[in-house]
View 1 (cartoon, rainbow, N blue to C red):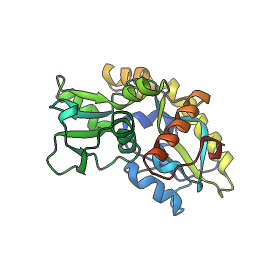
View 2: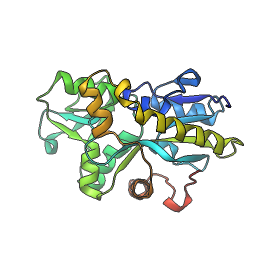
View 3: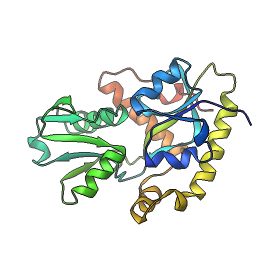
Length: 243
């Protein structure tokens, strides 16, 4: 079996996708993964969707981190009513979730707050990954906006938060894609051993989905449309290359 340099965020929700590949996996914050892939330091990366929508990358068909409703680990925490929020502190590890938040607030609600660094004081905070899960556990009564749930309510489509990406010129692209799909197959069967408790089991089986099929691709194409409305460059769904 070929050995590849695989990049992944150190989050619970990614563990089923790298099951059995841990020894060849390098862990970095999500925002760093696309640049490391682009520079050739990685052969494949479980990268944020927003940063993977590039003509440089091919996307692995059939595997990703998906929500079809509440996602639990991508949340906007706000004490005041959302309509009164004027500033939002952004989790430093996020790219796609920040773009999704902008789509939800600006495109769908016509609401344009100030986005500030995570270290600054703000009326609301965007949290992702294990940081969001920890916040929910520590603040069970907090007022939250679940971004996966909000996207489904507005579009009727699932949201793909992260995809496996490879460089389009990668000669072994189809080989690594097949390897990653097989790892997903093993990982889904092993979620009971990956989860440390009932809460993690529920998260990995009820909130996070790992299939990227036609409906998920429709969600990706719709997200591209919404990004263009925001004034950002994004391909059409037909321009994406799935391998």
